[in-house]
Length: 238
Image (tube, rainbow, N blue to C red; front, side, top):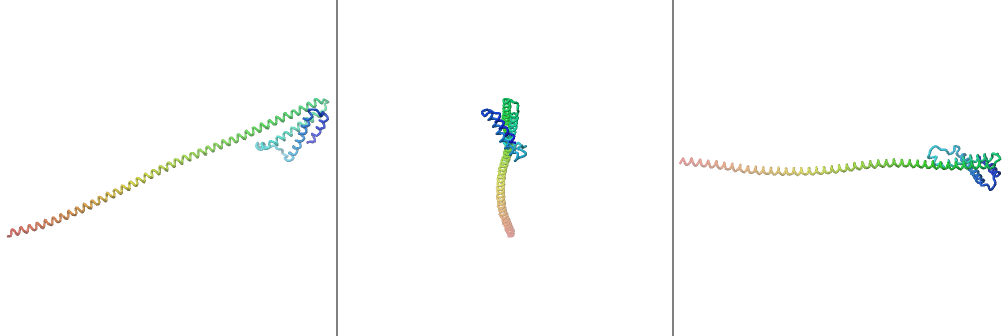
């Protein structure tokens, strides 16, 4: 494809003077188109399907290559248009150069629009990436909030459990105190029962002593009555 650009140099050399201000512009355009054509040929040779991709992420990663390829294609179109304009044999060199100049300006305007479009796309893509990251950050924040709320609930449950354990410990202490009090009361009752038993034993012993004294007294009374009776009989007999 670069051979199609080669005649432009000789044609420019024949149509323009060396000091013509338009000559460097045209030569630079043709040289750039020739160089980019070679690069485009090499790029298409290594990648026959081109660098067009479907996914936005891959397109962003290969955006420079895509941009270069688009620029190469537009340079080819511009060079061919310039070559067509310069090759037109209408006998009017000024009009021919004016048309070539317009072709160059159209190429320049297109390149600027292409750069702006790419920048807009790049900005939109980065904003999209930022929005995605922000959404992920919001989702992560929501998850962290949910985890924090769950942790707070768990902490609240643990606090309530601790309070319940404290209450249970207090009840256990109170129960132990009640048990000790009941044991003390049982001991007091046992002591009282022992004292009552001792008193009853003492009373029984006293009653037994009284019974013995009464028996002895009755025996003495019988003896005395017998003696008195004998004495009375004897007295009456004498």
